[in-house]
Length: 498
RNA sequence: GGCGCCAUCGUCUAUCGGUUAGGACAUCGCCCUUUCAAGGCGGAAAGACGGGUUCGAUUCCCGUUGGCGCUACCA
Image (cartoon, rainbow, N blue to C red; front, top):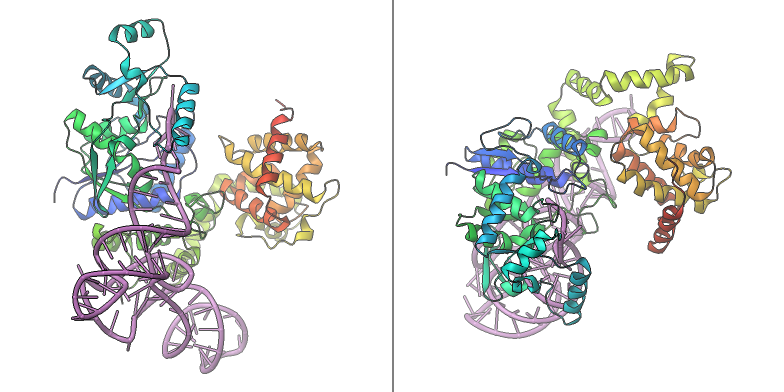
């Protein structure tokens, strides 16, 4: 097989996810195994949620994993640009082409009408699907409304009957009735394409031959196949990978578990171990085969036919075992200390740490106890440690619960942003910032007296902070759904300081 | 609610109609050992349920149940 080209297409809307690394790894392995190319494309068509910071982190994280791409936004390539927000003109052209052929149409329906329509369909036990109202508009009507500046979207025209067969490399032929396939929006009212249009156009233009993506895309595959046929293009081979799961079998989510690649890096997992672990979830070891293997071996032994279809649980104890083996079997003492040094942070982080710590220590030996929490995993906290003056236990729980949520929404992770969040929460609780911050010191640093909180949190990193707050909260009792809702409305109604 | 995917030890999985259902992590016991790890040896641990097909089903088919995903002008 030659000319193989695969891609991973993350959306820069948050912290790099281990699932992204998993999907990237499978695509990478297949391409490399067949002497092909692996492409990285940024799917940032959601202007509201995409951030440059997130894109940077994702590239960093994948690079840290040891996965290298042949073409991408940072390295360029013959089929660029590799950032969808920079390809708007291309999508517009193809969308127009579809509209002119009647394979897509302009839709002026209001959100309210669509909502009502869906509610009615659900009540009637019918599939949720655009009813085609705007399909009945005359060309003149459409022209008039566009001229009048009415906002509208472009939707994919989907047949009302017939069967769509999606051939999946592992699942075989999966059948969908067209009447259950929605007439998806292809171009939003802001002119940006949706994933559905952009990924099809890009995969074609970028000569992608195989698409290995998460299972969440299986049900929209018919729309994509329809687009390929409207354009007269040959679709790539499809394989829908299982979604990684939490130990409770639900889709791996950061609400329940650490999902960030950066979290595992911050905790001191080696990239080789993480990748090795994910590789085992894609292609399990055969009887008698050593499960410890480097990326070369992973690529060499990779078989698409062996990729599982059931969602595997991200089993941290197994990752721990692999990581331990790398530490003791693959690293010399020198190499280990070198890793530790690099893990502890570059000069920037260390200098900042020195600056903050210097005024607070009398002897060099005071340093380790003071900043040890920055280099630790889970803190050994007791419920009583979190008892503070001026705050009832329920208030502490509220503060933690709200902080976990609000901190996740912070676009940039720095002390200033964190400070805003904590102060806003203090206000919502009707407390002084100083009092409200106290339990956070304990949860984050393990002690009520420590280096400044906001800097500590920045230095610790978002993933570790989330994990510590979650642990502290669990110690006091994870809030019920009801509590969470009430508390969140409390925050929403509070005054927001500038 | 609708549509789709999935179903072997606690977890990841092997088995491609006939096996004492194999391996790995975790767990338990023993050995080694100044402690703790590591290491060695051993144990416990699985085919969701009900129908078919077949001489024979974990394996093929159907149903039930369960889990998961999608059901957005998010990806």
